[in-house]
Amino acid sequence: MCAIGLVGMGSSVTGNAADLLEADIPTLLRAQAQGDLSCEQLARSTLDRIKRLDPKLKAFITINPRMLEDAHALDERRRVGDVRPLHCVPIAFKDNIDVRGMPTTGGSVLFRNNMPRADSEIARRLRAAGALLVGKANLDEFAVSGSTISSLGGQTLNPYDVRRFAAGSSGGPAVAVATGMAACAIGSETVNSLRNAASSAGVVAVRTSHGAISRRGVIPQSSTMDVVGPICRSVADTIQILNIIEGRDQLDPATTAFEGLAAPIATALQPIVLKGVRVGILENLFGTGPEHQAVNEVVHTALTKLRALGLETVNIDDVSFDSERSSKNLNVANYEFRPLFEAYLAQIKPVPGVATLQEYYNAKKFPSTMQSFLKNAVSWKAPLQMDGYRQSLKKGEALRKRILGLMDDYKLDALVYPSQKRPPLRIDEARRPERNGVFASAIGFPAIDLPAGFTPRELKSPQGLPIGLDILGKPGQDARLLGIAMSIEQVLDARRPPPLSKDDN
Image (cartoon, rainbow, N blue to C red; front, side):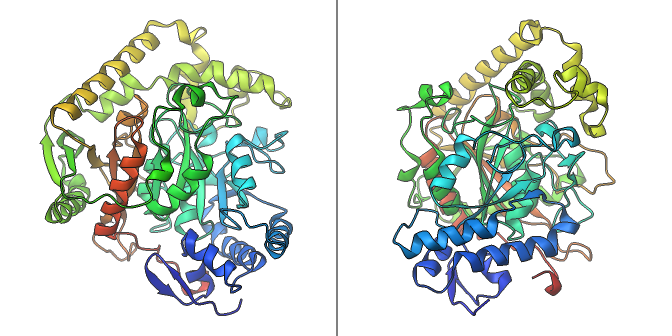
C-alpha cells in the first residue's frame, strides 16, 4: 500500500496498515475523496488484517467472499461521481443479522448453510449507503449467553489479553472493531450484549431507544428487549452509522410506533458542553469486594476529571438497583425466546432436522453455556401465559416509572455506572453476572458504553484491561445522550488500541 497521510481521531497517522485501519470514518472518506486511497486498497488491508489476527482471536465466522469485487464496484461508482455517505467504510455484522450472500448461522453448526433470501433492513441501508460489508462476526450462539462462544465460531478471545473473555454476546463484532478488522460493526443486544462487549474491547457501543432501529432480518430473542446497534471506535462514528440505520421501517411495527417521538440522531453532531449537565451516579452498581477495586478506581477517576470541567453529579444510593436480582426479575427474554425462535424457524428455508426449539435442543450441538437457558425454554409450553412473564413485565414498567421519577426529581440528564463490576474475566474463571446493562434493556431506554480507562498494566496485559462507563438517558433523547457522550469521550480520551505485535500489523 502506498504511504498515505491521514488524520484520524485528532492525531496524525502514517498510512501503514495498522494506522490506516485505526482511522475514523471521516478520515477514510477524506482519503478516498483526495485520491490517496482506493476502496480496493482498503479492502485488501482489511483482508490482510483479518488473515493475520483472526486465527488467534476468532472474531469472524464468515468473510464476505465478494469483498474485493464489492470494493472494485465502489471504486467505479466513485469514478463516475456516485459517492455514498459511507463510501467503502468497512463494516462487520454479528452473525444473527441477515446479509445477502452470506449465511446467517447464529453461531450454530446446524445453521451453517442458512442463506437469507435478502438483506436485513439494517444491512440494506448500509449497503445502499456504500458501506463495504466485511463479513459475519462470532457471537454467543443465538445471542443467549454472555461469553461469545458458539458451536461454529468457537470462543472469541480478548485482544488485550487472550487469556480473557471477550464478553458477549456481541464479542466478535467488538473485537473486530477494536483490532481494525472493521471500522465499525453492527451488533445486537437483549440484556448487555452491545455494551458489555464494547466495555471488554475498549470501544463504543450504543443501545438506542426501543423502536429507533428496525430489527427486521435479525434472529429474535425478545420482542421487548432486543435492539440492533453500532459498535465503533468513537462516539462520532457511531452517530454516522446511526444516521443511516435509524428510522421507520414499515415492516417493523416498533419503528412505526417510535416515529416522531424523538429528535433525529443527526442532531447530535456536536458535543454538549458539560458545564451544567447533571448525572446520577448509581452507587449500588459498583462492587464492594477487592476484585472490584480496579473498576471502581477507573470509573471514579473518570468522574473526577469530568467534574473538573463542570459536570454535576448526584450520588444515588438505592438498594433497588441490584444487577443480579434485576437480571432475574426483569429478563423477559427467558419467556419470549421460544415462540420467537420457532416463528423464525417457520419463515426461513428449512434447516435439516431443526423445525422446533425442542429439535435444536435434542441435537445437543450447542455450547454448555446455553444449557440452563435452553432447558427452561423447552420446558415452558406456553411461556407468554406464565405468571412469571406477566410479573416481569410489570416489574419492568415499575422500574421505568421509578427511573423517570428519579431523573425528574434530581433534574438529571443521565445515569452513570460501570458497565461491568469487574475487568474482563480470565477464561478459566467461573462466569459471573456482575454486569449492569439490564436497567436500560428491560425498559427500552437509550444507553451508551464508552472507554473510561484501563486497569494497571501487568506482564500479560501490557496495556492493562479496558473499563467501560455506561451512560443511560431518557427514552427518545438519544441525540442528547450522544452529545453528552461525545463531550465525555473527549475529556477522558481513554481509548488505547490493543497491544498487537508488529507481526500482526
